[in-house]
Amino acid sequence: MNYQAFLIKYAEIGIKGKNRILFEEALVRQIARSLKPVEGEFEVTREMGRIYVRADGSFDFEGAVDAMRHVFGISGICPVVIVEDEGFEALAQAVVRYTTEVYPEGRAKTFKIFARRSNKSYPRDSMQLNADLGEAVLNGCPWMQVDVHHPDCVITVEVRKKIYIYSHVIPGPGGMPVGTNGEAELLLSGGIDSPVAGYMIAKRGVTIDAVYFHAPPYTSERAKQKVVDLARIVSAYSGPIRLHIVNFTDIQLAIYEKCPHEELTIIMRRYMMKIAEIFAQKDGAKALITGESVG
Image 1 (cartoon, rainbow, N blue to C red):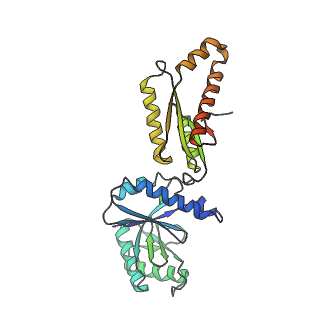
Image 2: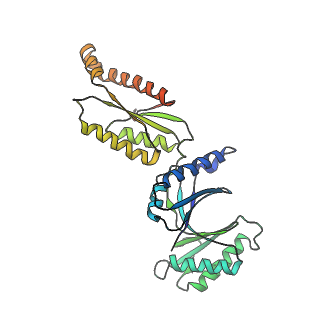
Image 3: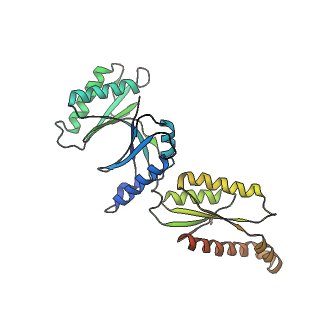
């Protein structure tokens, strides 16, 4: 099947009230940003509670899907076929053609039609569309039977100004679009806790920057590179991360020389927090992310 567009599903944004449009527009921007490195020309639009990504000409399908799977706020990515509204017979033919190509004999035995009619001027209501399109698929695909409870595939038909046909939903990461919930500073180390904490906070819509405390020769260049690599991995989801690398050796030695040894760790952590707070103020962040497990 030659897809030229995607319908983007979101979850939490849908429960927002009067400011829902702000979250939708933020998601549109994040999707457009994620698709910039992908081969092809894309248009991301918001239409009547739906977000669509349309490709102009040939494009890297797998690359586009992978890019959007890294965008917080997306709960599902649906490759869609778009057809003009040229009457019911043309629609029925398009649905049968779609079903034949996507679910050839042997791939699926049962199906369900799920029609949604946003265009209320369309002459058939949703229930009629379900029945009539189901009959068309039964006649055109004799290897398939109707099962409205546990079908092998659900073919969704959305009637709007144009008609959208899809059946696959590729899972997205969920959450909220980055940039909708303020900014925070991440104390990033080479362990697993802090990058996971950064990922989880970014998933709530928070823009993050990071601070890493480097203490050569006690910490190696390899350790620093690991932190850079971790920041790059998190940034694939969170967007660009400004990583501040602080030379902590002199402070660490001074603490070791002048402070009680049983309190070294907590004193060093206090200095790290104060330094991170300075960077947070410069970056406009209102919170620190540590990744520490309490309990």
